[in-house]
Image (tube, rainbow, N blue to C red; front, side, top):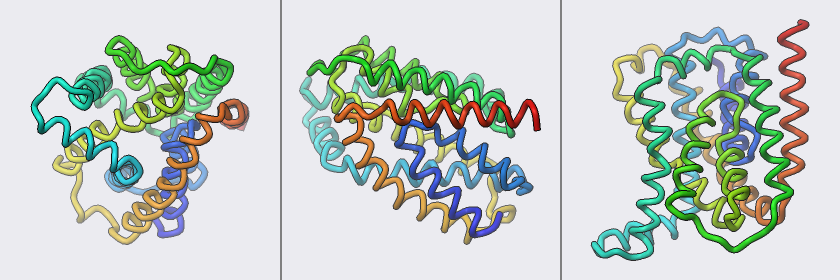
Length: 264
């Protein structure tokens, strides 16, 4: 994998992790365009590192909220921070279960399955369209909401379904305030990404002998910097009800992917 390819993949990951257009789907499409002939270990290592970069950019953007949550937890009281943390944990359960029980099956879906990516992008487009039309409220996230949002996140493991798009859209459709929905959506994924990253890096499947370090560094930095910009932008977009534009974009890209896979 070359440096230019790594740079492009990093920028795409940074943008699409937060914008509701499916980072995994776009990475698979770009890999197919490039004719990704990298070893499977190197390609998966790059994917893991890019997701790690965007997780860190989330921590930077929400550092104040995360600090308040951690500080509240160390008070060892039933306070707002403890309740919010428990809701985050509840939301993580469905995706964690899928990741543990069906890890191999999920990884098999990330192997140039462009037709699947196209179909899931169109599904994402439908979710975003419905969410954009939902009424604005000031409702917070309940424990039952956290379970439903967590299920949406688990389904979004499929390449082509936007994780942020699925969780934010589900939250908004449940009547949750848009700003709170965005905050919860971004914070709930950080522990999962970092946990998955640690698991993969400690696995015997990943060795630096099989990986070119410089492209990984370039991709990581690109994903981190563009992630900072995209995360900040997405918070404003959701608050101002601008999801319909991403709905149109996902529908177009999904259609192109399906047509290309079936007729070319």
